[in-house]
Length: 279
Image 1 (cartoon, one colour):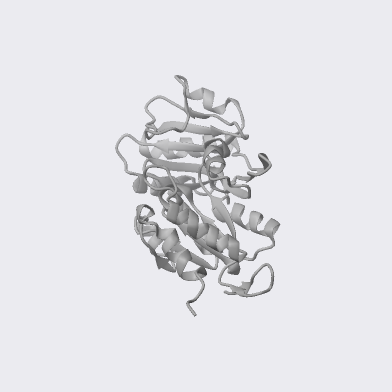
Image 2 (cartoon, helix red, strand yellow; image 1 turned 60 degrees about the horizontal axis):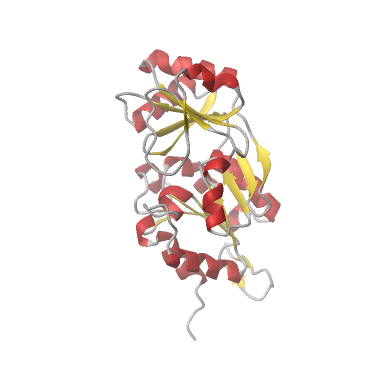
């Protein structure tokens, strides 16, 4: 849906560009290419706003936003947190009911057997606690190993991460939804990342709240993503673009599929939409 530019001089194809981070805006080496930076600058110069919408909590996102000199709003923690990067301030935060999460976990383990656990604590500096057996992907993101999984429940949480010694991510998420979907939200955010969230929470929840603050409607939003946790965001936005490297579940609901995150897939679309037509 077209909308007017900020100065009213020309129509904009979209007023809000929502991008996931991992597997989408970020390349495999955790950097943003110069071409993608330039394409985002082209769109924002035309009057569109760019918003990061990520499953990462603020604590795992701030360093990336700072490196990008990103000063706007960011939706973090699968929609649980709306963060003002320019002011380094947490605007909203939703926590997981630990009693419900414990009950959900018991129901899942009754079907699957013992799970490996990790959890994200609430707040701008909330630690990610990693219990015995839980595998964290190698990289720069800090995590705090714990020997007693009971420590997970000792402070407010944004979400719980679960892994199984033999079930793959899709199978684990399917079981979790089937037996505990009435207690918690279940999503898959990446390889080895199945999460239990507050019921009803999704990227769409946080994005709609942030968009309202920016005065932008769903129809004026284009969203980019790569994993099943981006499905609600695609359902809310006017146009959903899956990366070539995206999970099949997301590609199935996307309005279009672009190039991969390592091949400047975001830039390919934004250049087409926002580059001035040749005279």
